[in-house]
Length: 243
View 1 (cartoon, rainbow, N blue to C red):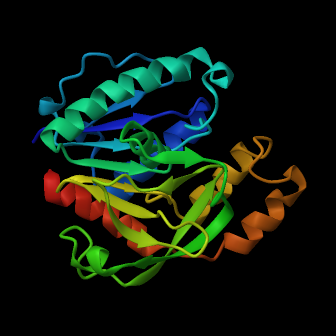
View 2: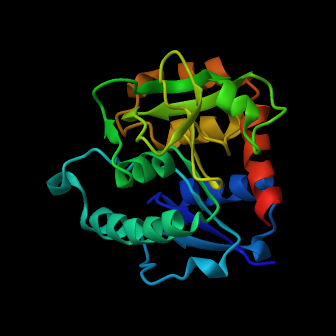
């Protein structure tokens, strides 16, 4: 089997490691089945994606919509390299699963509008509703029409480019699940998160502007008993379909 490429962008080692472990756990992947790259730490220029079963891009504190002058040098560098990968992905319909930043960066590449203008969501849970295209989609068919997911982001996609197919929405953020071609998927929510993982991220990013620092314990208590199984199934189905 060709490995899956997992691209991350979390500067904090503990946060990155826990996200990676969650991708493995809920994707049903062994560490030997993946090639992990910390985009903020290492260059990945000139990767040939024909060597991989698929690409998974996670989330992180970087914002697509920040002005270029506000982005640190490592983000400016990895966004250029990521755009080069998107060129391969869209030219060849390479299997792709983007989550949070993985949706925003892909949408920006395709000409979609990603901004803080509307639809940012507080840290917590969101109810996602699949539309008719979502219910008929090969990856999503048979899943519950409504399901809960963990979310929390400062920016959102304001519109889907013409080539994209909207598959799922929420009341707070219309672009929650989208597909391009037959094999390129992205979700606004975190498909790898569970309640324990969310609690850890709340602690890690307590001072990163997602919420007031003194609200951290309240957010953890509010979500500690929440279960979001369908996002995990989406990730697992993606891996099983393309491995």
